[in-house]
Image (cartoon, rainbow, N blue to C red; front, side, top):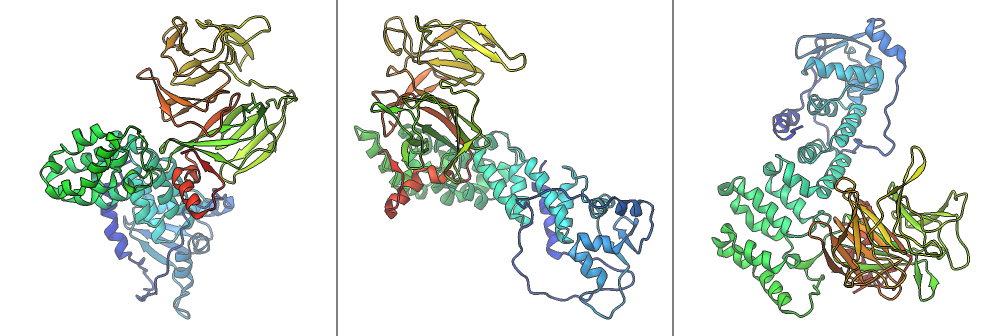
Length: 578
């Protein structure tokens, strides 16, 4: 759906907002003091209401009708004024003459709307629902807004929310803003921020954004981008759509990018060599402080960035990594650490579970974290604990029948009491059977297993002689791609040997987390087949587990920006790893 052009056509008619005409009475024009409009578009308890069936039966058989609606296309509908009054405060005021007491009641009115829109309004009034489609929603929502039919407004907004796509979300966002649908606007804006890279690739609406609309999006802390180079590229993509008409907006848009988080090479080769910047001494002067910042950073032996400098202010991450429990200093822990990938910082949280444990399972479902089973050094657990990252509370859930640890679906490697294994099995939940797949090239216990992009990765582990990461003939990990080959294939080596550690996919990278003797964290790029350093955790831990939650409404609480603010206020309960 393309909402941009049609919205421009509708906006003029809405500003005038004509009153319905009547064949038997006319309402006097009267100015009423405007009040702030309360948003009703997406209530938390939204549900389609079923109206009494007899109402529609009476309508279809034209029985007990006491009024008429004429359309702009010269069609007449027989109606029941009481039923329309129940659906719309506007119609109630009109039909009961609430503004003109003592005057004869109105029985007829004309709505300057197409027949199919009037039919939708009547369908809702008599049944509680109407057929909303991508073809009629752009006319139906303004009509429902004009005639104060709250139920249709809610159903239209719910429809638009479900229709959000990278190709149409910018038009829906503008549409919601124009018609004061604040909840839809807020959710639409979050969708735009979270899917910004897809929008750049797929949306034809992007080039039609107003400069102030683009600036609001690009300045937002929640803009979901892996690097600031994307922001500069977006600015230039928008400008080049109409270079002569838009290049004068660069003065305000150029500040949307956080240049301190860019690579020095991109800044010098791309930003400063841009033709519009080359032609403008004013723009070059605006970027001078960024140039100094990056030159100083490039000359330092350490690559640490001063994140308190506004030019290097990190965005709020869309994905938050949670590392829970594990074995540390000879005993199990109940510590929780979260990782902010935008600032490359770990934070030690005090929102810990009451029971320390290791070798447990961890999974995410409906933005909740479930911790399953585990071991505390003496006892194996059958309990299930649930963490709500919004309320920051742990709660007990229904326990399993059996105590267990080392929870998994696929199973690879391991130790059978005699030897370290290289075999691999998969569980099919339909016939409820385990089936062997091709064995790994290396025997491993304490191996970490993770799936990413339709492949299975077995990383690290112990072969009975040494922990697997390097060596003349042993590789750190292997990849199993059932679509390409039945065999496991070796991948690049990790920097450090590991076993009994956690893995998680974050920002399209595989992170390996934990090991008894190190807090060192690495991440693997499956495309380039390379490993990179990440910031270390606060604690050395093994036998921990980790999972990633996306799109949390309070993601800022787990971000560097929030932690720095708390520390500045002297009230932080979470400790950052600097």
